[in-house]
Length: 355
Image 1 (spheres, helix red, strand yellow):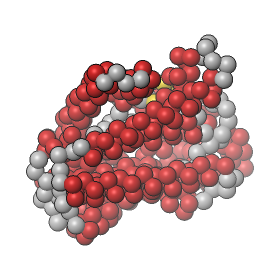
Image 2 (cartoon, rainbow, N blue to C red):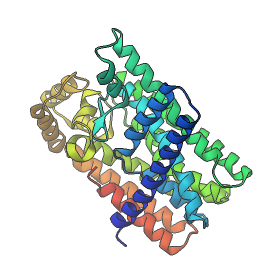
Image 3 (cartoon, one colour):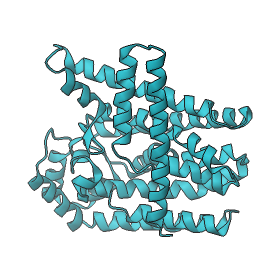
């Protein structure tokens, strides 16, 4: 089966589990006569999560369990959606930090509250952010609830919850580093790679694979072999994400092209461009990074500079080299050949994706 079809099949199964979770949760809230605010937040969270998303993290959670020898596919799918709730918790807060108005083809959580109450509250900015933070916290709570109630032994669940705590701590460190970089006038490629390691590689690839493997009873040596494969793949994932953020299709990625430029994000793509740019090109980039609003003409100018300086080609080359490293380490993993084949195809898919 082609990797795209395999991923689509797993995504559909994850979506079904998410729908069932929210349907049950909403019925439970209604039957217990919980506060109306809790019902509204849960319904808003349901809409936010189910509107779109690649489900790469729950899919990798599932895969981690399978490659580590787990056999109960039904049980692991129910547990794997926990990471999607945790992901939403982090996304909602990240959209506030980055001041992003859109997510997955719709409004970010804080903007959805802004539209609903903009004529009813004089201090609507504080209100919308406060509500989004609370909904994000609720998503986190639901994620841990799913894990704690999963049909696995208490010992395995405790280990998995500890691993989840570690993932969130790593992600917080990466997020903080990203915020620090955004207000720092210098461009440091080493700091950017370190940030991407914690904010993306350990969170998006390594973490989910570890969670599933832990529930399958994997030991520390097996987890270490996963990390060797996952970290370079995760950094390649982020490099490709940065490329898509400027050169991608707005309809496919679900948010405006150029938003990373508006936020002044420091990426390897932009850092290499600044490094190779002449004075005129550099001045254009510096002026546009962090600007309040960037138009299509300005985006096209940024794209032109990125291409002319060789930064796009350089970034694609670095991502390709990281994928090769990841694949070499995959060959050293003691897993079934069919599982190696899937992860190999997944690596190719990640670096070649368009959204």
